[in-house]
Amino acid sequence: MKILALETTERTGSVAVADGGNVLLEMELSHSQRSAQSLAPAMRDLLGQVGWRPDDVQLTAVSQGPGSFTGLRIGIATAKLFAYATGGELLGIDTLAVIADGSPDEVAELSVVQDAQRGELVVRRFARRSDGWFEPREPERLLDGESWLSQLTPDQVISGPGLVRWVGRLPSQVRTLPSSCWTPRASEVARRAAYEYDRGRRDDLWRLGPRYSRRSAAEEKWDKKAGC
Image (cartoon, rainbow, N blue to C red; front, side, top):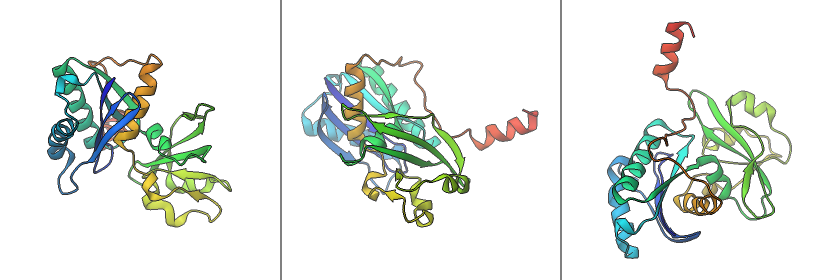
């Protein structure tokens, strides 16, 4: 199956193409432009480099979140439009699982943390199954950063972009993965998409939407005003 994968969760992103679970090529989006400006040209260039026409793509996979409002909206809107225009299928992929998948082979269990702004983090624990894939061991949680620090246990393994602001305050016995593992990659989106599609997962193009790390400030302000 020919797969095009998009990852725009963080400030900069990436795109990749894969034949089933075999990633053929990955490209980082330009750091000098926002994802909205660089995503479509990168998709065009990547498909051209592997000799695919847009309608050769059978599955468009996109990182679904949790993550930033702007990045997720851009990525998912682009993926839905591309899948609709080419007649291919669409699959949204959990961003925290994608980060876990980027861990070294010897990691059996870890927590993935993502910055939710305002001093908070989205946290989820994953464990590696016997087939090598990670699965969640708890629901994702939105935690105050200070509270998260107080809950850390010795020898815990941590990864994810949320570490950028907190890594200097971690207890010495906590292990952090190399910073190259913290950012979600389109190549891992493609691999997980192939794995989940083969096992029967499907998404409705019209219903697929982003999963944000938190409600927007405007929504929270409205709730307070309405007494919710």
